[in-house]
Image (cartoon, rainbow, N blue to C red; front, side):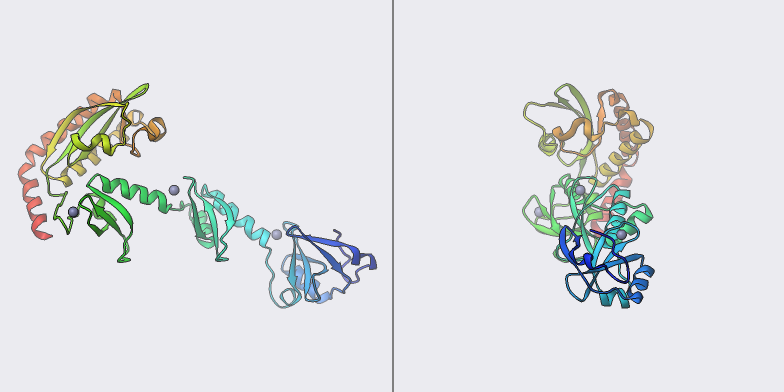
Length: 334
Ligand SMILES: [Zn+2]
Ligand SMILES: [Zn+2]
Ligand SMILES: [Zn+2]
């Protein structure tokens, strides 16, 4: 492959070959008009020859030196673009937010396939990826999000089915443990604030529990602080513990409502993250042995967690009347 002299290709150039996208194209012994060369230069290319047929010229990008077959009419009348440079720009945008551009989307030229930091591959519009990189945002992952929504729902006896059949924004379809499927807002589900239309079982208004649970993983014992409607019964199953793993419910505190239990439990985790991050165990420490994303603590945290639960106990006793009144109000409002 040679760079041809611009205006008058030498006779020998007819035997030259351009390799474009890995495909060889014999150079055609046809002239290059000065106005095409000038137009190509304005767009950032050198017009280096003609190939394929009388309608195509070969442009070499002045930025990345990639050769491309472009219609003469596009070179002359429009602004050609370098697809290699565009691909490079999109790859860099993806990289900036921890993702990787792995392929073009076969069914839409504005979309690419990206591997996210979590490992999932998603289809995204290029302009959105570049906007995310410019704004320093991450790309959301539907699969991870669905896993989080499902995990949150399981605490309340629901399982995520998928997007809401109603199509309503912010809603998902969930299946209640009675089998009934219903559309519920993700925000409400996070707090268990929903009632099954089939069996009428509302978790939020029912008594619930905060529990402290010790799990003896091979080589390491850890603590889990959580809330549940039926802690003793469901804990092992809910946390997906292996048969060989022994566990013990260390403490259970009954509260007047699920909402109260969720709020108090979240406050405890927040306190631990802020004040004692060294006692919070990251997911990579316990991995798949416990089916939860977090809220697992070092065994050393036990006295602190007891003290936090003592605080909840004191608050719930003094607020018992208020909680009952607000629960009753919520029940009548829905
Ligand atoms: Zn280029
Ligand atoms: Zn993901
Ligand atoms: Zn139900």
